Amino acid sequence: MAIKKTYTFRGIELPDAYWVVNSVDYRKGLKTANGMNPLGFGAGTYNGCMMVYIFKDKASRDSNYAPVKERMLYFNLSTSPDAKSQVAQAYDYLNSLQDYNDGEEI
Image 1 (cartoon, helix red, strand yellow):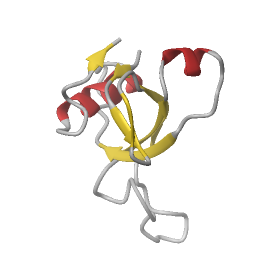
Image 2 (cartoon, one colour):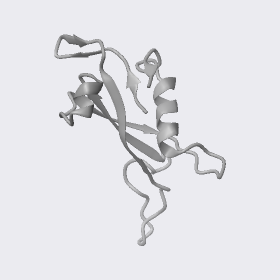
Image 3 (cartoon, helix red, strand yellow):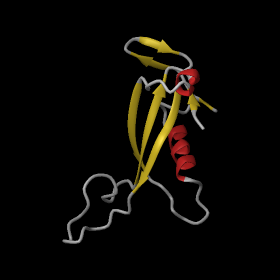
């Protein structure tokens, strides 16, 4: 799964940029053993976090080159029994954002 979408990197347009969800993390946001509220995501706002890698193109990704950019995004994950996978939910969230929604899902 990936999104093909133009990305401008340091003034250079990459028309075949390849956006990949590299990781998805989930936290319940439970209090710590000493009763403290959790820090960061999962603290009542969002329970999910994804790391998106942006490659120059698919060939760069397939050749194991480094991404030109990394982005961390926070969102809400469903853990219900009928929910999509965490990765599928991450891509659904990306497609709901104005910055990403005009890309081609691959």
